[in-house]
Amino acid sequence: TWVSSGSMYYSSAAAVASAPADPTTPPDLRPVYVGRARVEFDYYEKAHGQSLPDAPYLGRVVNGTWEIRGALAKEALGHVLGTLVRTGHVVELAEGGFVGAHLYRRGPAFERRRGPQPGPKREEIEVELSEYEQERRARIERNNAFLASLGF
Image 1 (cartoon, rainbow, N blue to C red):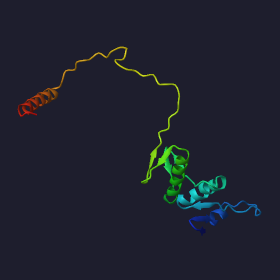
Image 2 (image 1 turned 180 degrees about the horizontal axis):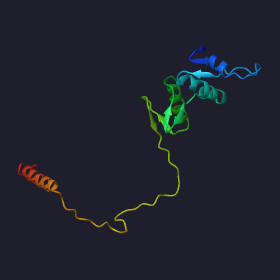
Image 3 (image 1 turned 30 degrees about the horizontal axis):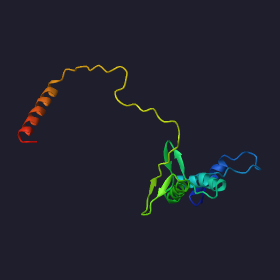
Image 4 (image 1 turned 60 degrees about the horizontal axis):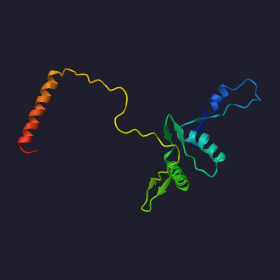
């Protein structure tokens, strides 16, 4: 039998089937989750709320992708942007929106290279053009000559 509690189900039949021979040991009533939202709420959001009660749950990053439930995204983005504005990394525009503050740090200057670079030069290798490429270049030359005759 299955006992439902919101979006979680508890398997009392599985608990009875896996019950130990010792009757004093309680049956296994761990939840079987239906859907990711409830798992995320139970394991991530509750733990986050206990450790950082003043900050909203910001989701998590999995394989380089930010994952958060849609209902929590607005509050999370507001918190992140508010923190960036307070630290001076982002500027909030009067007409709405945000822009990076372009903060720079003093440090050693980067070496600038100007002009031709010393070092070995590449040898240009002449490649024989295919018949198609030869026809294409001839067609381009004809078109350019025609355009020049028209004054373009």
